[in-house]
Image 1 (cartoon, rainbow, N blue to C red):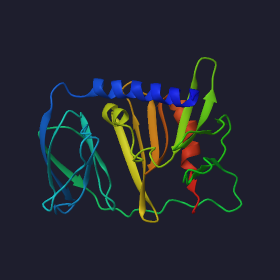
Image 2: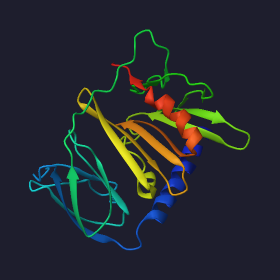
Image 3: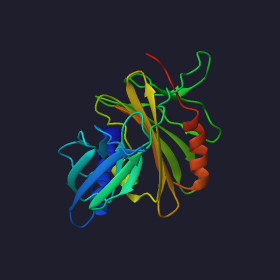
Image 4: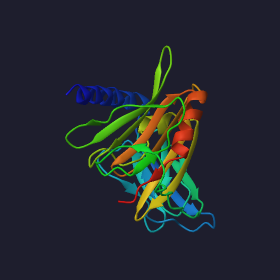
Length: 241
C-alpha cells in the first residue's frame, strides 16, 4: 500500500507539472510531413500534443491539423528518423528514411538484472556504483529502481512493466522542456521500442527506453550521473519470451 501511495503522489506532482509547461493559449497548428525527396509521409504519428482525447497522425497527403497547448511535438513513423519540433502555426517537417535495427538479445550465459514477470523484456548489465532495489509489485505491474547513492541526493533509474504501465514513450514534461533531443527506434519482433533522451535548460539530462507496457527512465540527472546511467542503458538487451 505504501509503495502504491508513493506512486500516486508522484503521478499527482507530474500531472501538475505538465500543466505548468503548457502554452498559455491553445494554438491551431497545420503541418505537412515529407521525406527527404519531398514525398508526403502518411500515417506518421504526431505525439506529445497535450490532447488526452485522441491520437493524431498524418493523412494521405502527409498533412495534419490540430489545436494544442504543447510547446513541442515529436513526429514518429517506423522506418524514419523521429523529429522533435517546436510548436508553430505552420510546420513543414522532413523525416529521413532509415533502417530500423532489431534490439539486441541477451546472451544466454550473461548476468543481467531486470523485472521478473509482468511481461518485462528489458535486462541490464550491472554497473559499478549503480545499486538495485528490491522489486515492488502491485495489482497490475512490477517495478524496481536502479540508483546511485550520494551524501545529499539519490539519483535513480525507474523501471516498470505491466499491462497498464504506459505507451513506452518519454514523458511529455521531459519532451517539452528539452533544449536538445534525440531519439532512436528499434524493432522487437512486430513491436517498436523507442530510446529517447534530452537535455534540459538547467543542464540536467533525461532518458527513456520504452515499449508498450514497459519503460526504463531517469530525469534530472547531472552530466556525470547521466554518463553512469547511460552505461547501463547502453548495455540493455531483451529476453525473447
